[in-house]
Image (tube, rainbow, N blue to C red; front, top):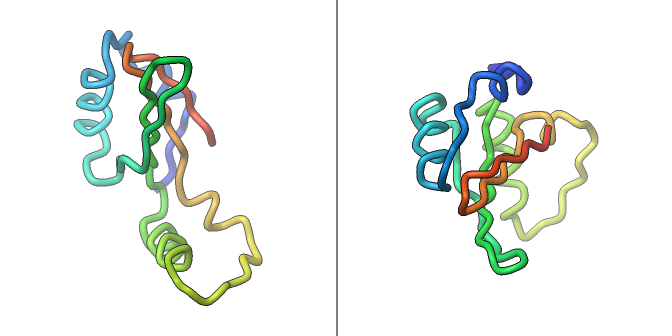
Length: 97
């Protein structure tokens, strides 16, 4: 499933909080929107999500990361299987394609 990041960005409302943004993305993309990590940057919590474009490739990639045996990645396909979305506590959004 391909996502047009520009179209998503243009469709988004102005969010006032992380929770509001997270709820909107979950409503739009369901289980293709996954929390992966969070961090504190300059005193503000930032949440990192993956928006999964190709479920099969993404799952294989995530599984390969958890293997104890090193595996060579020979194409860009695993990295193209998702986009990273950062959401700050105040609802600020940043996309990584």
